Length: 238
Image (tube, rainbow, N blue to C red):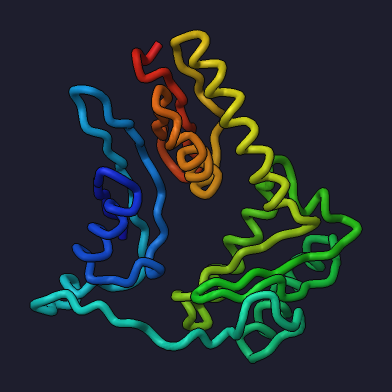
């Protein structure tokens, strides 16, 4: 299910979503749609879109939302042994290993990190550039399949993150630099700039990076998963 909420800050919007849905904050994914800084005569706000596969108390017919603390993390501490620690992890490793072999680009799959409701896997392969693909789209596609498979194993509560050659970190650093470069450009031109289509994680990083720049605002545009972020000078949407 998809829901939209607003707040004066990202935290306030997320808090409102958790309270309204009766879910823990880590039970849903957050996509920032729009941010607006406060001014002399206007109040700032953050608009978010919430994605969740879990049934809310309202949908189940409960009279009042009851936020469950959830089970203890079954995946162990972060940055632990890269080998599988349980059957779930082993099945994911076997699935990913078989998938990339069927694609014709074999490699070695290990656990990268373990967090509450999130686990990362790393692919080491001589074909890593192909597996990553342009702008990480191939890696995103394999990651999506891994999350679908995790759901079929009954673990919709666990989010799977896939990386290779530290692409995620390098991509994040690149996007932060891009965000600041574009912000400088729109401040000079007093106009706007539309970025290339990005996945929800990349768009959220752009929004968050520029959230503290008082005279620059951001907004997602388009339909589907790969939307575009428009960065514009707050004095006018050129």
